[in-house]
Amino acid sequence: MKINILLFGATAEIVGSRAFAHEADDQVSVADVFLQLSTEHTQLRNRQLSCAINENWASPEDHLADGDELAIFTAVSGG
Image (tube, rainbow, N blue to C red; front, top):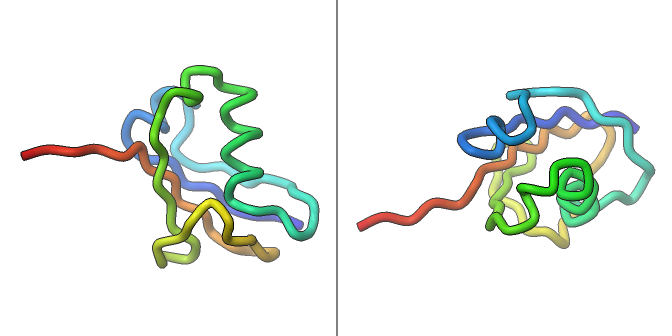
């Protein structure tokens, strides 16, 4: 299946792209995508990542479907 991945902030800088299509197995979870990205881009391993599926906040346990849009953000805090 194909999912579209959007990257923002430091995550986009580390990966070197703001958007790309990703081929994945059926029943892939957000955590699976995070693991693959952090394997390919080791600087992501120590980052707290947040995400949304089709513009709705999601958790790592959520599964993706064909055609979904996964937006990944580096979590930030401030005061």
